[in-house]
Length: 262
Image 1 (cartoon, one colour):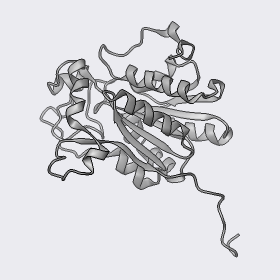
Image 2 (image 1 turned 60 degrees about the horizontal axis):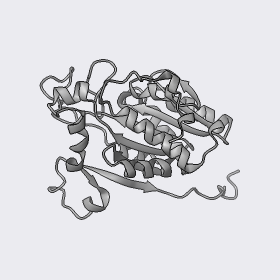
Image 3 (image 1 turned 120 degrees about the vertical axis):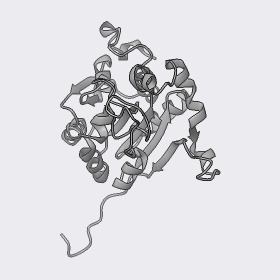
């Protein structure tokens, strides 16, 4: 990884020991390097949350905006200068709670931006509260008896809204994560990668998941590759999360307006 793409003067980072955010950030930087992108034409946008601090460590142009508003800001940047590569780094709430409406409409419009979700199943920055991505029965500071709400499935949500590239991965599967981030960034159209990461400080501690290392290694037991999951029954997949590429639609040709509708 090129250290020139990292603002090393801002290190050490603010994240808790064992946080998965740094691993996702490194994979992003490696993706940019391997794609050979012009770093002067990259803009990274974030809102508020642990994940949203990631752009500050990149040596690209970046915008740290309001909570939940990263996607509309990124949309405006892309529309103003289509030659830019615009990447949104976001978390549970920023993408699917306060920012959920922006997410589905950007997917519907197929805006040419990439959204990378640092999904650690809770609001880590503000004390470990439940989020729209918290699994059922999970303990958080706001669900001490276990979460009773069903979480969003970001893959199905964004695919149903019209996204043309959708994938999910986990930080244990480093090559898998890198490959899908590269494909998402290179894709022309709205792309989203849901990255399952660990929060040992809150989610892991409250749910007795062990230390950060144990949380990472455990992903190989409950994250299932789509190619494998496609051959299993729903009963066999109970309690598992499927990772892989779910949508990859090539960019359409020029729009053709039917005669008489101009």
